[in-house]
Amino acid sequence: MRARWPVALVLCACVHAPPPQPVWVDSWTEPFEGVRLLTRVSTEPPLRIFVAEVKLDAPGVGLRATKSSERKQTVSGFARAIGAQVAIDADFFSYEDYSPEGFAVGEGELWPRSKDDVHRAVFAFGAERRELKLADEVVMFEPWMKGAVSGKPELTRNGQAVLGIFDSRCFIRHPRTALGVSKDRNTMWMVVVDGRNPRSQGMNCDELARLVTSLGAWDAINLDGGGSSELFVAGLGVVNEPSDKREREVGNHLAVFARASQSMATARGVVSDGDKPLAGVILQLASGARVVTDSTGAFSFSVTGPTTFTATKAGFLPLTRTISSGDASFVFPRAPTPIDQDGDGLTDLSDNCFTVGNPDQRDTDRDGEGDACDADDDGDGVPDEDDSTPLGR
View 1 (cartoon, rainbow, N blue to C red):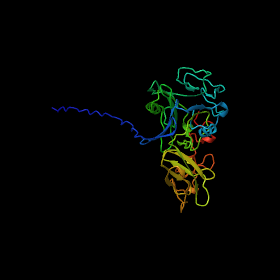
View 2 (cartoon, rainbow, N blue to C red; view 1 turned 45 degrees about the vertical axis):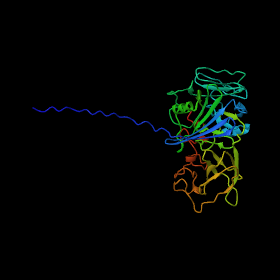
View 3 (cartoon, rainbow, N blue to C red; view 1 turned 120 degrees about the horizontal axis):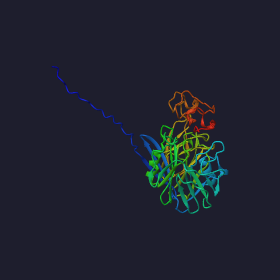
View 4 (spheres, one colour; view 1 turned 90 degrees about the vertical axis):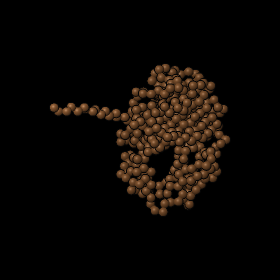
């Protein structure tokens, strides 16, 4: 008789490891009275987040949104034109005429053809009133509204992150801009997450919702993102790294006025090669801000103490310096031999994008700047500056 052996069934529990939890390094400064600036960095996964926390009831703090006649400006251009201290991009917009897709008010004027719908949320403000109307409620213009911006989807409602939203804009990690307010509407968070670069992978809407809620927002909304995402701070410039590698002109903006903080000072100077001033030198601050020397080689930025930056320019060795307020001029020595900073086999002076490896030197729009430094947000092969629908819409 043949022995009957028990059959052992081995069950394999296939457990997927959870994604790595970011290890955050936070840095807070107070560039203006009532305004705190957070720079949050993680290397695993790579993320760079910038937040302006604004106390809307602080003395000297005020808000401003773009008028219809002020459309199609970069964030920094709009902020500088009106003398604002902080600004972000706002509504999704049409590239045909740069009009916002949603409800928009600037200086008490409703934009032409502007209207709300049940899918969008609206942040409106007046002299002594601030309201964030979430989706499901249609907002109509009222005389108290000095300004308004809108976006979708909502990210936080009544202090709880809104997750699992079915929206095509939300599933993939991208650069993001968000706006949140506290329950009493006296605190506002302006949030920008970098994306599409090796130092920051961006966020999807669920991740963004958790972030804004964790900052303290009671209600929050998603604004226009991608290459539009940008946070400008006076004295520092554009503190994040726009994914287009340059600022994008957008439909409208939200700006903050505030008084200078007593802890802030200004560092300024001129960069030269020993004989003549150097334009186009990039100063990458440890805080994340980027400052570029002008045609006279001059630069300036705000500091709260010793500040470290790395200077780069084609044909020069990268130079790292730590400075404080006052005259920060320096001589930038040329590389004794041709160098290849990005390691793509081409020396900087012959490389149309010397900060990102691009050995093929592809330059789709033939503007002299390689595609590696000339972003294509929607991946259709048409660089943004020549694409009538750079986000694929």
